[in-house]
Length: 122
Image (cartoon, rainbow, N blue to C red; front, side, top):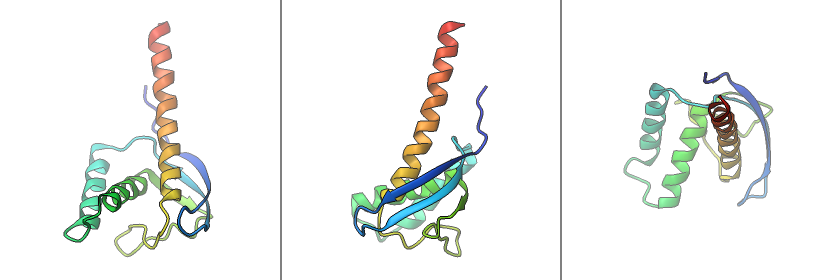
């Protein structure tokens, strides 16, 4: 059975553009529900709507919206500031967002590997 209980992860990376150090603790969900995935897609659309032409910026906006959907709670991470719409705003670096999603994917991969092993040995 799939365990989608939130898990705490830590981030400690240096920004690729600014050199700023990003640290924090994040409680994340490994998987999103269909409703959460829809909200994430709408958030990405709102960020990109009519103004973003650069494909790299579009990809980052998608990744940021995805990270926001996975993060349940953040502590000791003053850079993870939300605007009135509940979206993270003001980041210049994509490194911390990439790190959050890398750790979420590792959690997903660990479950998949465990599930494959259970199925194979059963």
